[in-house]
Length: 388
Ligand code: ADP
Ligand code: MG
Image (cartoon, rainbow, N blue to C red):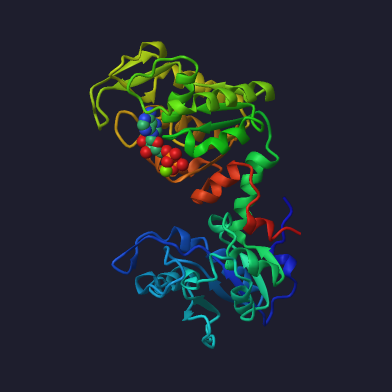
């Protein structure tokens, strides 16, 4: 996908860039507890300032729904941002005369009723504050809001450094990937990822289905899944996805053995059984070792991996084992240069970190909803607005 970059915006000296960023950081008692998202702002701010420009940062915080909610002000984020950027950072409300700093944070965009309505009048008020627009918040690009979409139509617009890197990494994984491509889709429910599965079967060579969602597919194929999490009403849907996969030449991999327990808790008494040996009072909480061996071979045969959703109830030991083993396999193949690996999703990122594999992946997306919509094959409105 061709989109404009900062260098396409021409001479920035003396100009002001409106930069949409993600400042939705975790806070406790007015203190930022994780500055990952603030770090992600730095490359674009540095690039604009190096080009002689100044930045007005637009961002939302929480869900104030068009009301001024003082606890959701962006003001407490400013000192932490200034520290990460290594520069003074000003703070203004929309409508105030902008202060003198080279970097200014504007108050929570969602305090404005027009923001989530993609209101063109609000976008015009933002546009009046700058000369060019840069979107550096991929995590917000699935929403057509005034600061992510309408504004991009009013000024010369480009993707920022962090967003550009994310789009390039995602394109390498699903847009124009090197085959064979394998997708891992796991997690709790099929219903939350139907569109993802439907898109992937037409795009990848291997689809590994794990976690609770595998149970629904196994059930659809006539397997007794006992007391497992299972969406029985999605039987026909699951069968249709399998049929589409076959038509598209996508090989689907489901567990052949599983770890079962009678209680859903850490260190619950458990055993490994073949997939047709699950008792009526047992729950499938992880894939078994035979499945892991089989899936590692699939990873070895692949050149590209895209992963969303854990293979089991990984938060509870020992039901993290299949997820950990597969994550470590993907990490070591990536380190060897044999695999391009991209993963995303809140629980997935936590699971990869738990496995000690996170830093070895080619790219980890921290964008939850936007990452899933991208896996659904959708064009994100905030990205579309930046296309050349
Ligand atoms: P992500 O946040 O990465 O998109 P999901 O939210 O879809 O992932 O799925 C993660 C959840 O799925 C985890 O809480 C995990 O415990 C749960 N899960 C995985 N396998 C099972 C299973 N066999 N039974 C019940 N829950 C499971
Ligand atoms: Mg989740």
